[in-house]
Image (cartoon, rainbow, N blue to C red; front, side, top):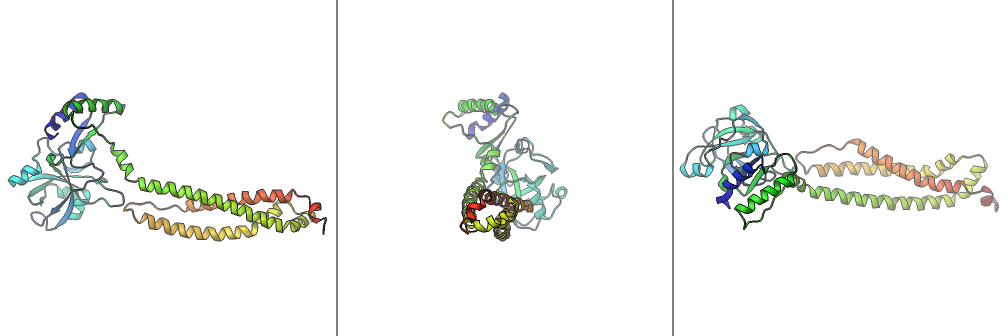
Length: 326
């Protein structure tokens, strides 16, 4: 397949199926290779760094932002050739790598590093996520080494992607008929990294709904029991001029004390649990207090409706029927 890669790139661009094409060792959302910077040349630091082997078209294909320096040239010397011949070659560093080396973005350009062979920094690119948000953006070195490529990254032109993909498939089958045409969209791959969180959210929503339903059933049963025990008391209050609102206050007073206690306990647990869960992410938001306020108000309204329904039934009972035996 590697023998046909050059022709494949040219055909994809010529046909208009792709706006830009580059070769890369991995998908940009999860770069795995690790390299080591040894002390020497322009730095005394020794550090591990993620390495991304690509071809010179990576920056324009992914739309990376060069904050200092220049993009790779079309005929850039590859790392493999430079390493074998012990010739200096170019790399790009991300801002996280430059910061860890103790340089500014402008200072980094032209600096020489020891990657096991002489290397100089040609440019600095803005940080981008090449791993899950559970981790911080770490130091990254981008190097021209298409021989290490495992994927082809293509930027589609504007318009219906199905048309461009159909063209791509035709070109692919003409150049590599014995290889299946498989493709994935980068944004969908990013989304797939957080499917676990989405599933957890769905499970919590389901069980929260079930818990609320069971709680409402229990509350309705308890209110019914209390109303039955206090039917005569309520009838006497009605005879003495109590309104339906007064009856509602009598039945709900004790329940809302319990609901208040449960709201305090639930809020405390919610704050603790959300803080513990968010600690698993390097980049995280904060939970707004309005989340708890809305939840408490929602429970209060549901409880009030549940108690109110039973109150209306009790209030409609004729006091004469209840008190005739007294």
